[in-house]
Length: 95
Image (cartoon, rainbow, N blue to C red; front, side, top):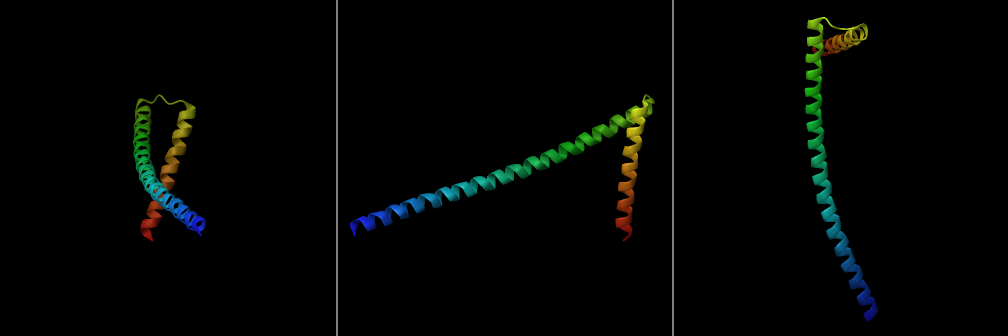
């Protein structure tokens, strides 16, 4: 009977350890999720800044008139993409 009581106590102690460890892991998981969310927001902001800089470079290139054929084609495709995006936005506003 003493062995059974000892085994039950050992199981309870191990269970308590596991519960504490689970709580710590949950806290760490929440912290990591917050860190990931912050990093994703920072990445999004940097992507927007990069896109703005690319647009400025394109404007400067267009203003100087020093575009080769490949750059002109790529710029035309980007402008077409912007126009499609604008059309989609206008369609959404009209509905």
